Length: 304
Ligand SMILES: [Fe+2]
Image (cartoon, rainbow, N blue to C red; front, side, top):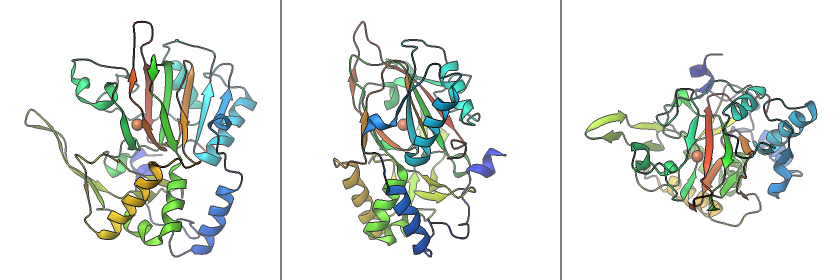
């Protein structure tokens, strides 16, 4: 399938639980979603023998978790192995092939996240040891190139810190809709969130981009664009939008049982439909240098 059409925003399918005109479908979907929803991050973890070649039960266990929570953590045996085939071939087993070749990525589309020091990457927070606020990946991408799946593979953790908080974006949707359905209405408007152009030395690297927070993909699944950053972001001044953002911010800043917190260890990785996440600050030492591979895909995890 052409990635541009797959990633675009589509009209609601009939009976979509995400349509505000269909409260009965929403209620049924919501109740099924919350029934037995895991609240401990340990429940997301699946030990695997070789992430490059999962056994059937390993695949099924990871797939089932992704269906329920839009994410799973695999724990492989290969600590400190920098082989990029580990995450690349793991992703392929879930139908993930179409990598977003973003600015920081290597030629193969895989991004090595580590502290970059003085090179140009060091101007961007992912390549520093600073905390990163809540976001979904690629929220600044054009609407036809949205990131639907995100894979993070840990080669080696930091000496201290580097913890991720994780929240299923469908849980964020439920929280907002249950608080006030109008929040969903305004957050689905195409101009609600604008990322100003990115310029360096007077040259425009990326034009300004506007889009919705929530949208529905061709396959009927929910997509979310979001960043909690307060600089380089322009939100609609509509008071309902401002209330919605405050409600979402309060959830993200809370100790909700739906928020998982985990520090990926060597050989572990997060497989996700680009759920909301943040990262705490960290410190490396001579023996411990945090290195993660980040793979962003236009596809969602297959059949989730
Ligand atoms: Fe991210």
